[in-house]
Length: 172
Ligand SMILES: [Zn+2]
Image 1 (tube, protein in one colour):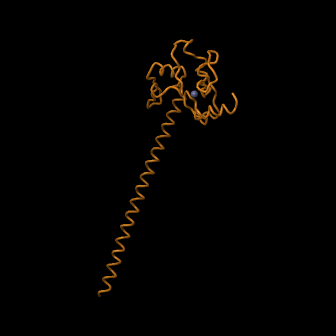
Image 2 (cartoon, rainbow, N blue to C red):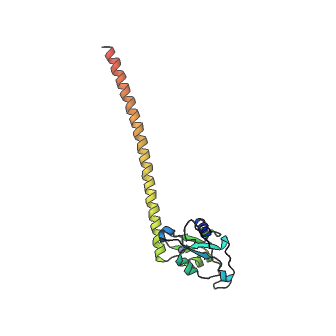
Image 3 (cartoon, rainbow, N blue to C red):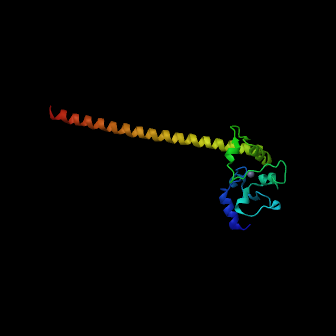
């Protein structure tokens, strides 16, 4: 596969493994090219058949093709299938299959390997921190607004006192 084509694949998969979701930056390198339907089982080089994926997922997937291999369950396609319908991520970072295809997908690709669970939990922690920072930012904006309001009402009061003082002084 030429360089330009490979770039397009990386972009299409937003630089992440189509199967487990790790980013190139998490792995520290570019990822591999997988043929969803293996070439030896009639798979082509068409865009739809190319999956960008990490080495480990590629190894686990191997040359599986449901028409020839047990348990004859179709391996979900990261872009063509709605993975959300088949997979559920639990609080503890574990993926749970919601359909037979989902269960098989997790099992075949070993998507509950300890390092991936750790990765998912880390991502959740990052998200929580980000939410907290955004909440604090909003509180800060609210406080700034309150301070502006207080400042202008303080200014009005001072102006009023000043006017009264002038009036008082003009009528001794
Ligand atoms: Zn992967």
